[in-house]
Length: 91
Image 1 (cartoon, rainbow, N blue to C red):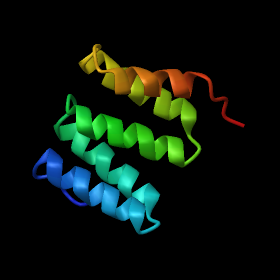
Image 2: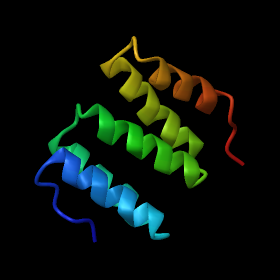
Image 3: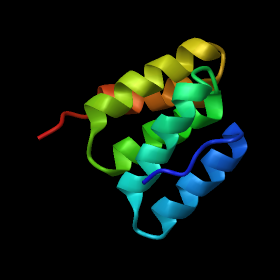
């Protein structure tokens, strides 16, 4: 069960800790819950895209990465992630 997201930075840190503890799906769930409350948080969006990518869910990751890039179209790191994920094909 995902922890409630009182603030985006707490959810972000908790999700990454879960992923580091080999609980990636729980981390993904935590980020989705946080994004329901803070839909425009760029750090949460980036973390979710990266965890989805690492889980082999590149199509979902690409959708989130595009949303992240729209939030700050001049962020080269966000644009690079979109480019990377656009080249990946899910099995």
